[in-house]
Length: 276
Image 1 (cartoon, rainbow, N blue to C red):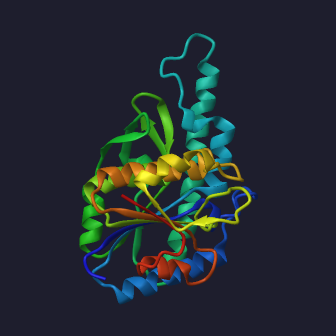
Image 2: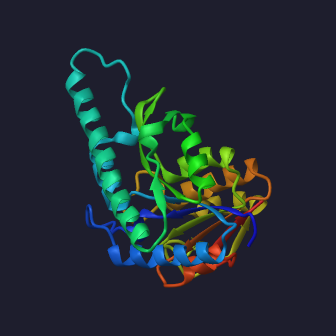
């Protein structure tokens, strides 16, 4: 593997128990961190940017406060209380996202991966959830000295919505303009895109952009609470990036089984491959 740039997302469903609020899957995180360490050691030229979802941390608080939907920026009289609730929720979602990042960082460092987190809330401003401002220099510096940058789903101030939540995919969409990836890997617990969700008997191994329009009706949402839109949104976002980034492929796969993350990082299609 030479001079490849890969964005890897560890999905919230993979690294937390999505049905138990604020519960990380520590054994799974340790296993994934060790797989990342092994791949980085064997591919010193690989440029990797890691992202993770919020799972039962961010999504639980976000749903309670409606954080992703934003707030009317200039509240009418009588709405001040509602605005206070919104911003209190905004701060709480930020706190919970950071809590999960702490677990991710701890397992990476214990596995021997020199990683450093870059929280979107501290450096990104968006307009309708499209990142419009970011201090990218710090991430560039981290990559130059072979530190692993870690980003995640997080709250962000938004010029149109007041505040919102940026999913890891939203963050990746911006970073793809700065550090064009050759591959984006989305690791979750779902084996890939099913032709017959929720029956899950027919896994689609590859989808080309031209085929996608014909399939759209069949791709469903997520079984657990996911305020960022489930599988359909992920597929659409990835095809949006493929259209903008020539030669980019993305893969949606399950890293639930040991070794699958390593195989995907090494170029094997272990789920559903999306391509132009």
